[in-house]
Length: 370
Image 1 (cartoon, rainbow, N blue to C red):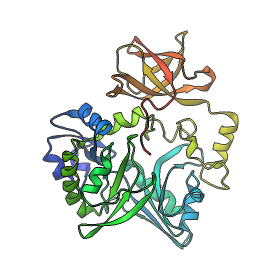
Image 2 (tube, rainbow, N blue to C red):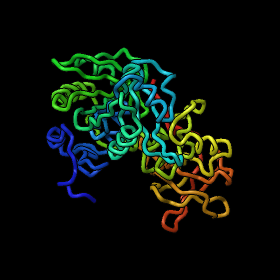
Image 3 (cartoon, one colour):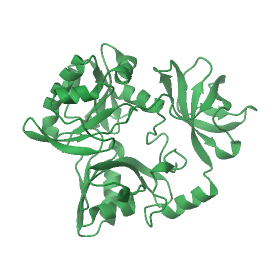
Image 4 (tube, rainbow, N blue to C red):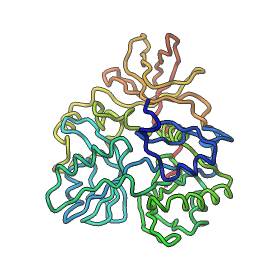
């Protein structure tokens, strides 16, 4: 584990300290996992039932600009930017030439000549390096990790919160707009990673604390609360969303990790295209499955998945207690040859004890993103 001296801090670090947080290292940053006065379950429940406010400023930010920047990014990343228009965002992946996943990220299409990228914290430098090395002289790739904060307002009352602070709310899902707030510009995005209706706001680094204060007051007024990365993880797991380093990695392809839908299979070019097309044609050797516990117990990552004969057929990649379902849930990579489909019963080996689980279709809980 890193010393805290080696970790970067959010522009909102001092604001978190006021809320009695539990800090932990995450992606090279010291971030709040939960706050006092409730903890992960209360914060999770607030997002599902009212509204929660997250600091996700650890997420990367990168700018690709120059003539044909969008076409260049489209030739590198997996999804098809040609399917969206300026003002829209798209979930996509940066793959290796061998088909592994460097990162999953959001691409914000500003214009034909400008794309703003939000990678995961630990992978930002590598994504920027790969793009910069591939870019022609006319295109510049800039790491803006420390230039902007990112705040997420997520939950059924998220629209009321943004309206209360004077930010626009009438946005389609996966769209964004730049808005003036308190004398500065804030990018307002109808995005998120919780499965709830919500927004992600991108202010300048120095402007993030004032925006946090205004949002937290509005969130509290709506009966919500600040939420840490612990609740963010339980929320995304309930939706079956992948987390890089768990469901996606340099050794896990998009098709294996449940993100094949974010690949523009008909595109002429993207990194890893030939390998990924061949894997798709021959079927991936393993696939991501959702498991819901039938017995008492909480799955964790790294647990063997067993078939009816007790043979290992896979391994969990994430596992947690679902505050919404009040039971254990997990994501697991399972061998395709095992023929495991929704409705099948499997078991987890929990340190020698068997935990029965049912394979279900994702998500675990209903999505309300739109």
